[in-house]
Image 1 (cartoon, rainbow over the protein chains, first blue to last red):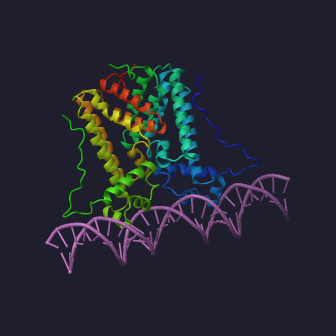
Image 2: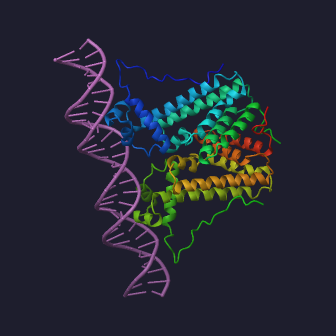
Image 3: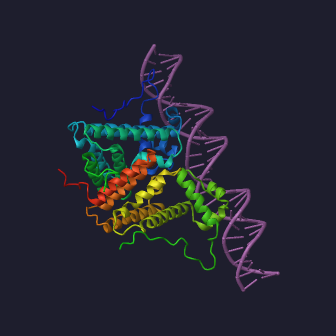
Length: 210
Length: 210
DNA sequence: GGTCCACTATACAGACCTGTCTGGTAACGT
DNA sequence: ACGTTACCAGACAGGTCTGTATAGTGGACC
């Protein structure tokens, strides 16, 4: 049985005594996540993050080597949460069922309906960080995680066609993007239906049509 | 017959005599488009644009009220070019054929294979400009244009299902995004095949499955 | 008490940002 | 010749950015 996600250890490896892991780091990450997601990364300065988090600047730089590392930590947290949220939603469903493959779409349907939804944090971050680096690495990691999850779930469900994982990722990306930019939640339900077709093999694979 | 696109007038409305529309504006737009797309909008400063365009700063501000207007002009140009490129590709195909609906995917397949492809300029811009304004308006305009094009072409081809336009937009967005972020051109061919299913009505619509 | 350390507060450096302003040049039509 | 205009070159203002340095506070543990 495929292990879809790797629900992460939320605690960093404990340092010798207590380490700089009390409250400031958590507050910084929460504020950074909120602001980065809502307003964009380059648009949010360090000064504002520390002000809203009630943290001194020196403390931020004691926890993170710089802004880029803070951004990377924000994305890591988002990726881990996605994985555990999906795992929690997949777990109660009967193994091998198509519904398990569609679980991420059901999760997404809830997300896009919440106020403040602004699309995929990784797609958004990629728009701002084209160069190789910590941020690009986290984006790549997350993409592989999502693709791996879809492929594992599809394989479990016995989905046959070539590139089923790619098709599901395309539908998932498109659903997030269109639901956001067009303010249209039906993008997710439409994508979910198409994903069901892909899993059931109802659609006509490329090259075999006509 | 539906007019899919409105191939735009490339010339702005002529001012009284000559107006400030000689060469500097074009160079500015070309350089801005290249840099904004490649590196992100907030990451590119005015100084660099005017330096690479060989244009004085005062000239830039004579043509555009500010950076935001330059960004909006960049997006307008991209949208217009998309529309005319699609129109050029659709036009020779037999009216009412499914191939016409798939033409944007064929265009995209070429785009994602070119070096420097970095996804959809509008999705990327939206990540950086969440607030209402000129930029958001151009993004909305383009989204409506794309959706309208797909809907018109699908209607021409006799595609029946509800929300065919939404499904096609989702597939198109997902294809652009996944092909870019995963460096995987097969995202486009997969999306094209799914789009063909949508147009032919081969897939199972939501709510009628089981 | 004494030591350690996570933390606060603030000032600062150096770079970069957008946008304005001044001044000069060259082509063009009259 | 003359005015208009499209343009270039560069200084400047005022703000913001990241990151560092300095000085002090309060709790935990020995």
